[in-house]
Image (cartoon, rainbow, N blue to C red; front, side, top):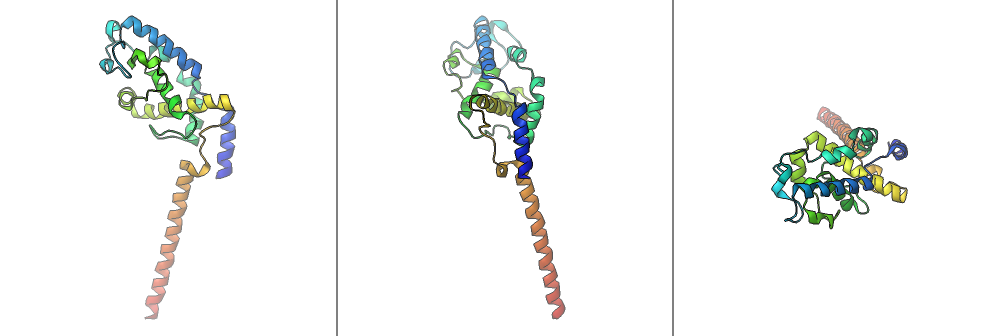
Length: 208
């Protein structure tokens, strides 16, 4: 129901929490310093495919998300994320509509996957698109779906802080809840039409 959706949206505004863009930049800066120590990423552009195998130069085998996990604790966002997915639940790699959404989502993945970037990406912060194949290598399907919605929610959160409104929030008729209800109603109506047609046909047969 539309009124329920609007009620959930108003409630969601009170608990909305995503990874702040200041945190994303902080993670990115710390990662850049660590990459200098590891001596990786200086001779490439964009994403550094040489380290996709998990070996990071002088640092060898290491957890590429150690800095991300230090600053971003998923448990801190669970309540907000649950409600976000109840309202929107974007499919993996499906983007919401809104101002600078590609930039916002790129910065999220650029920060989390910073060890896989080249040094030059610092100058292109947010302007280099995420690598879906890299993300799929490291995230389990269920976790990837939640992480993708986390990235979308963080973009919405940072826009909300700036503008005071839920940029990218879906109209009720765009939600999966409405589409399921619409499909169910259509199926029910089709069943009623079919039953009526059979009844009419039976009457016609009786008259013969």
